[in-house]
Image (cartoon, rainbow, N blue to C red):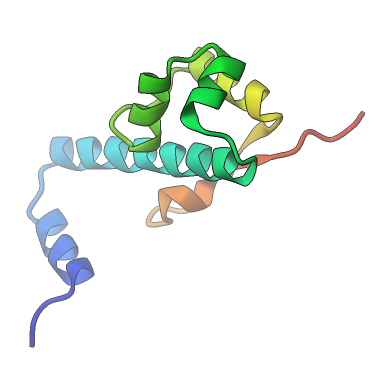
Length: 111
């Protein structure tokens, strides 16, 4: 029987050094940010170019963020969330929790 991707990934991670695991973790976090930004943009029926115009972040940077190639800086993240009309919500999760489960965007609470 062939291995699943999850089984292969677990075997691969078991052979990684601490430094390699840190790189993998950073990549997973960047990809999670990208998924959240992508979902919020799509929910608002915006193209990347629309979000770029609203936020002042280049379309190329938005593309790289959404694909998980780069993690947004704090300043860039604030620009994107302001343009999307949302706030960032982080959840402190136990080790082993999928990165996408610890990051979400929500509408600001009227105060």
